[in-house]
Amino acid sequence: MQVTILVGSQWGDEGKGKIVDLLSENFPIVARYQGGANAGHTVEIGDDKYILHLIPSGILRKDVICVIGSGVVIDPIALLEEIELLEKNNISVKGRLFISHNAHLIMPYHKLLDSINESGKNKIGTTGRGIGPCYIDKYARKGIRINDLLNRELLAQKIRMNLDEKNLLLKNIYGKDELNVEEIIEQYEAFDKAIDPYIKDVPAFLNNAISEGKSILLEGAQGALLDVDFGTYPFVTSSNPTSGGACTGTGIPPNKITNVIGIVKAYTTRVGEGPFPTELLDATGEKLRKVGSEFGATTGRPRRCGWFDAPLVKYSQMVNGIDSVAITKLDVLDHFEEIQVCTAYEFEGKLLKNFPTDPDKLNLVKPIYTSLPGWNSDTTKCESYNDLPQLTKNYLEFIANAAGIKIEIISVGPKRKQTFYKK
Ligand code: GDP
Ligand code: IMO
Ligand code: MG
Image: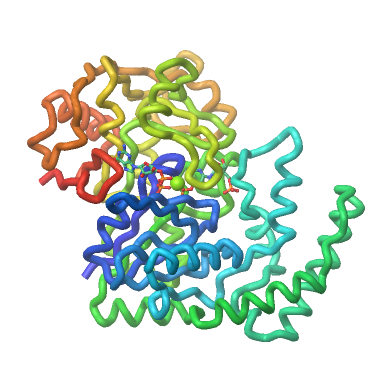
């Protein structure tokens, strides 16, 4: 029996969706613990491609139960769209999708405030999904939760209370039109009918499952460097994608966790603003983006691309307690004569030992690179570690040593079968 946390180890989009889909063959339950529809987790099965934003990627296996924990912020519109899309593709979620009664709801004013906050000079480059403003209300103890949908009177009262304040802000501070409170109440009352069958006491459900010996996979969204506490603040998301967030976001206690798997891209990408020491703003960066199809799964924005950053992954290993990693998108490096790996940073003429998350410092560090020869051959058809070219094995060994990680899974393409274990 395993209770495994799967985390993004860099700035998100490491290929978590693909690996969750793969591993969920052996996990009867998969749960999301933080974030919201800012996530875009891609799973390719045969010729079909699914991008999941809120529902755990395990949903594509028909016998897997999927759970959305209380740490997730739920946009009912996005959720119902996703359910509809799955049902259209003959993937029924009935009886196997559960949503925590304590999860917070994204409201129309959260999305509006997200876009207003991003229209100024100091933008973060958010996904515009209302994530930050929703978590602000959660921590200000003004949020509206799934549970509130069950009591019409209380729901209307809470929406009115929030709207009183938000409309003042919209009108007097931002010079925008006020939102119509009755329309929002009506809209959310309608969500209640649609969402009702999925509501569950998630901590009780998950802890019962553990006591019955069932394995659970906890699917992180975003990545460690986007963590509000351990990431490159303020250029982060508003939740805890790191492994600690899996306990607070589901109600599974830390002593029930058996292991942590980190998903590590064979190079580095980032979407949105913020420091990125190994970013390549030249033709090589363009090539990584093109070969790796590095465009956001949620917003379609081009992802910023750069070489593998070992100090960053080492830091991520530390704050997540990563036991083993899956290296993804190794095949994207098939097309490079020479591959660079950042092994350390220089800051003001001195060697930096630890990864600095402070953006002012991280913006000024100079990556120190080791150059490795590229293998210049197709790895997408490799079916085992032994099938890989020797130069590819050398690259993997080099990054594993430099970042202090243990590689267990290797991914050489977006499909399920383009994956193998390094025995
Ligand atoms: P996530 O947010 O971590 O789930 O990752 P995304 O789905 O946003 O981005 C990863 C992208 O890379 C998706 O388009 C995947 O289909 C694709 N992908 C995953 N693993 C591999 C791989 O090993 N090789 C290649 N070429 N593509 C991959
Ligand atoms: P997955 O789960 C990559 C980034 C945004 C922005 C910052 C804050 O697919 O890996 P937010 O909308 O969360 O307030 O934006 O975080 N970001 C992601 N980047 N992958 C994601 O999710 C992301 N979710 C948010 O681009 O820089
Ligand atoms: Mg993604």
